[in-house]
Image (tube, rainbow, N blue to C red; front, side, top):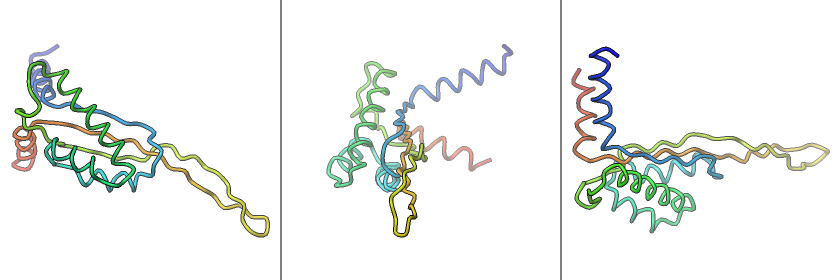
Length: 143
Protein backbone atom coordinates (compact mmCIF):
# COMPACT_ATOMS: atom_id res chain seq x y z
CA UNK A 1 0.00 0.00 0.00
CA UNK A 2 1.33 3.41 -0.93
CA UNK A 3 1.92 6.20 1.54
CA UNK A 4 -0.95 8.36 0.26
CA UNK A 5 -3.44 5.50 0.53
CA UNK A 6 -2.28 4.63 4.01
CA UNK A 7 -2.54 8.25 5.19
CA UNK A 8 -6.01 8.70 3.72
CA UNK A 9 -7.13 5.36 5.19
CA UNK A 10 -5.93 6.46 8.63
CA UNK A 11 -7.79 9.75 8.29
CA UNK A 12 -10.95 7.88 7.31
CA UNK A 13 -10.61 5.57 10.32
CA UNK A 14 -10.17 8.51 12.69
CA UNK A 15 -13.21 10.27 11.22
CA UNK A 16 -15.35 7.15 11.51
CA UNK A 17 -14.31 6.56 15.12
CA UNK A 18 -16.73 9.20 16.39
CA UNK A 19 -19.53 7.98 14.10
CA UNK A 20 -21.74 4.99 14.78
CA UNK A 21 -24.73 3.75 12.87
CA UNK A 22 -27.61 1.30 13.05
CA UNK A 23 -29.72 -0.10 10.21
CA UNK A 24 -33.29 -1.37 10.26
CA UNK A 25 -34.25 -3.37 7.19
CA UNK A 26 -37.66 -4.47 5.88
CA UNK A 27 -39.70 -2.54 8.42
CA UNK A 28 -43.37 -3.16 7.52
CA UNK A 29 -44.60 0.41 7.18
CA UNK A 30 -44.58 2.75 4.24
CA UNK A 31 -41.49 4.92 3.67
CA UNK A 32 -43.65 8.05 3.58
CA UNK A 33 -44.88 7.49 7.14
CA UNK A 34 -41.39 6.66 8.36
CA UNK A 35 -39.87 9.79 6.75
CA UNK A 36 -42.29 11.94 8.73
CA UNK A 37 -40.84 10.55 11.97
CA UNK A 38 -37.26 10.75 10.63
CA UNK A 39 -37.66 14.44 9.82
CA UNK A 40 -38.62 15.15 13.45
CA UNK A 41 -35.24 14.02 14.82
CA UNK A 42 -32.76 14.84 12.02
CA UNK A 43 -29.94 17.01 13.42
CA UNK A 44 -31.30 16.91 16.97
CA UNK A 45 -29.30 16.09 20.11
CA UNK A 46 -29.66 12.40 21.06
CA UNK A 47 -31.42 12.79 24.43
CA UNK A 48 -33.91 15.27 22.99
CA UNK A 49 -34.53 12.94 20.02
CA UNK A 50 -35.29 10.07 22.39
CA UNK A 51 -37.82 12.27 24.22
CA UNK A 52 -39.44 13.33 20.95
CA UNK A 53 -39.76 9.72 19.81
CA UNK A 54 -40.99 8.45 23.17
CA UNK A 55 -43.84 10.95 23.38
CA UNK A 56 -44.81 10.86 19.69
CA UNK A 57 -48.08 9.10 18.89
CA UNK A 58 -46.83 7.76 15.54
CA UNK A 59 -46.45 3.98 15.24
CA UNK A 60 -43.14 4.35 13.41
CA UNK A 61 -41.64 6.35 16.29
CA UNK A 62 -41.39 3.22 18.47
CA UNK A 63 -39.28 1.48 15.84
CA UNK A 64 -37.05 4.51 15.26
CA UNK A 65 -36.59 4.95 19.03
CA UNK A 66 -35.37 1.37 19.36
CA UNK A 67 -33.06 1.86 16.38
CA UNK A 68 -31.64 5.07 17.89
CA UNK A 69 -30.92 3.24 21.14
CA UNK A 70 -29.07 0.62 19.10
CA UNK A 71 -26.97 3.31 17.39
CA UNK A 72 -26.11 4.81 20.80
CA UNK A 73 -25.09 1.37 22.09
CA UNK A 74 -22.89 0.92 19.01
CA UNK A 75 -21.24 4.28 19.75
CA UNK A 76 -20.61 3.22 23.35
CA UNK A 77 -19.00 -0.03 22.16
CA UNK A 78 -16.64 1.94 19.90
CA UNK A 79 -15.77 4.56 22.53
CA UNK A 80 -15.29 2.64 25.76
CA UNK A 81 -15.10 4.78 28.86
CA UNK A 82 -16.81 7.80 27.25
CA UNK A 83 -20.20 8.94 28.56
CA UNK A 84 -23.06 9.74 26.19
CA UNK A 85 -24.13 12.73 28.29
CA UNK A 86 -20.68 14.35 28.10
CA UNK A 87 -19.98 13.63 24.43
CA UNK A 88 -22.68 15.89 22.90
CA UNK A 89 -24.02 13.32 20.40
CA UNK A 90 -26.46 14.28 17.66
CA UNK A 91 -28.40 12.40 15.00
CA UNK A 92 -26.18 13.55 12.14
CA UNK A 93 -27.89 11.52 9.43
CA UNK A 94 -31.11 9.56 9.13
CA UNK A 95 -32.13 8.05 5.82
CA UNK A 96 -35.30 6.19 4.86
CA UNK A 97 -35.37 4.14 1.67
CA UNK A 98 -38.09 2.00 0.18
CA UNK A 99 -37.85 -1.73 0.77
CA UNK A 100 -39.59 -4.68 -0.82
CA UNK A 101 -43.21 -4.36 -1.86
CA UNK A 102 -45.66 -7.22 -1.32
CA UNK A 103 -48.26 -7.15 -4.07
CA UNK A 104 -51.75 -8.44 -3.30
CA UNK A 105 -55.10 -8.39 -5.09
CA UNK A 106 -58.39 -7.18 -3.66
CA UNK A 107 -61.59 -8.20 -5.37
CA UNK A 108 -63.37 -5.41 -7.21
CA UNK A 109 -66.73 -5.08 -8.96
CA UNK A 110 -67.47 -6.78 -12.31
CA UNK A 111 -64.75 -9.40 -12.03
CA UNK A 112 -61.85 -7.01 -11.69
CA UNK A 113 -59.08 -6.97 -9.11
CA UNK A 114 -57.45 -3.96 -7.51
CA UNK A 115 -53.74 -4.07 -6.69
CA UNK A 116 -52.72 -3.57 -3.07
CA UNK A 117 -49.09 -2.65 -2.44
CA UNK A 118 -47.87 -3.46 1.06
CA UNK A 119 -44.74 -1.34 1.31
CA UNK A 120 -41.73 -1.72 3.58
CA UNK A 121 -38.68 0.45 4.22
CA UNK A 122 -35.04 0.52 5.30
CA UNK A 123 -33.83 3.06 7.89
CA UNK A 124 -30.23 4.14 8.55
CA UNK A 125 -29.33 6.27 11.58
CA UNK A 126 -25.85 7.80 12.03
CA UNK A 127 -24.90 9.19 15.45
CA UNK A 128 -21.94 11.60 15.62
CA UNK A 129 -20.40 14.19 17.91
CA UNK A 130 -21.90 17.63 17.34
CA UNK A 131 -18.70 19.64 16.84
CA UNK A 132 -17.19 17.21 14.34
CA UNK A 133 -20.40 16.90 12.36
CA UNK A 134 -20.53 20.66 11.77
CA UNK A 135 -16.86 20.80 10.75
CA UNK A 136 -17.37 18.12 8.09
CA UNK A 137 -20.32 19.98 6.61
CA UNK A 138 -18.36 23.25 6.44
CA UNK A 139 -15.31 21.84 4.63
CA UNK A 140 -16.99 20.64 1.38
CA UNK A 141 -18.75 23.99 0.89
CA UNK A 142 -15.54 26.02 1.19
CA UNK A 143 -13.90 24.31 -1.81
